[in-house]
Image 1 (cartoon, helix red, strand yellow):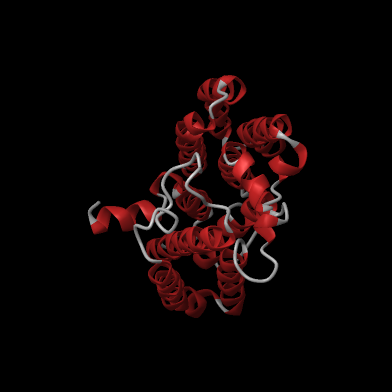
Image 2 (spheres, rainbow, N blue to C red):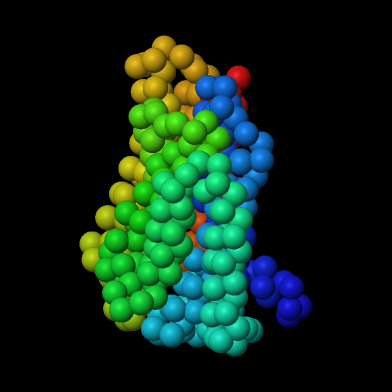
Length: 292
């Protein structure tokens, strides 16, 4: 395989919407409140993408080292396990990517203060400790909570704050929806990898409680995220078009059908990308309705 293609595949491009979506939401809410900053938005998006890619690189390396990724895996190729990139190289790349995120983030720290420094450092540390370190919390069933918090309220709230230089409860609450949809992406990943994770001792919620529980969690994440903007409309009487996020429930039905009926785990891979598109669609609909 071409070297560039291999490295691009290691970033897991189909799931990078988890980094982009909360930036879109936070920026639209800053725009609506008169606090939008194009420069801060672009830097925040670059940092979010870098931290997500760094986390993916770290996962690729650590899952291989711990035996979670084997030749029997049902998911897309993992470059370390497949021997496409030496483990040492992916490890170095992880630290380089995180270092670039930290360097770029200094602009946001200069603009918005030490709170952003704390958020950035904790986000990078969480990206590493998700699968690496002496107590990888992704192996302890805490991965869903990590994704919900960091790709939801933290990312949306942080994006809003570096632009508007203030924060409101509505922004934090709005961040729950992209966090839930990012969690739905992780759940499909864990449903697909349930057998391999169980053998490797990776105790995700799906391994602990079973496939049906994982599907139920997926449904809850999708439905709650789709309906949350309607609650905003009910409470505030504003941004009524944001309720159009319920439209994601239409394509979600097809994904749910696949989750319930597909028995071959390798055939679940397209559903992961489709759920990522639900996240992006939800965020774009919400952002346009909120900003306009």
